[in-house]
Image (cartoon, rainbow, N blue to C red; front, side):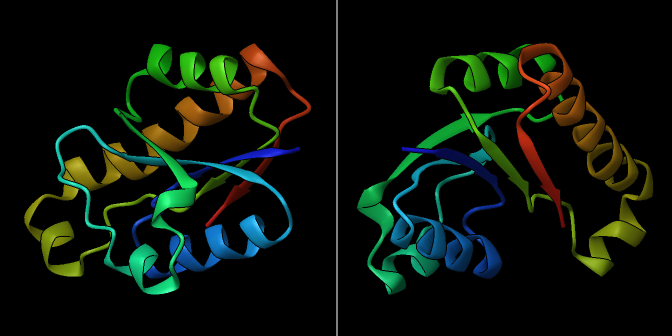
Amino acid sequence: MKTAMITGITGQDGAYLANFLLNKGYAIIGIIRNNSSINIKNLKYLGINNKINFMKIDLLNSSHIVRIIEKNKIDEIYNLAAQSSVGLSFKQPVETLEFNIISTVKLLEAIRITNPKIKYYQA
């Protein structure tokens, strides 16, 4: 069984991707922010919230990412996480750039360190 890690799993696209991959027989690791409560309404709507292993991690912390990849033997990573609110991006431009760019680099570096054969998708 392949294992996919999905960041941004609680959004609409993350929920539909998780459903698609579950139907193909994947195990799903759903990454959510350390500082957020889990909003799983999209996953509940699809009836898959109990089929996902949720993990709270900081995508700006390389050691957290490496640990999750190694522990769960991740085969594929789908990075859908981003600060995507236009209003918030104007109010917090530096934080938006830091998260959206640095978290991507941290994921790619974790792949390089753990297993360069991991497939990666960047939304």
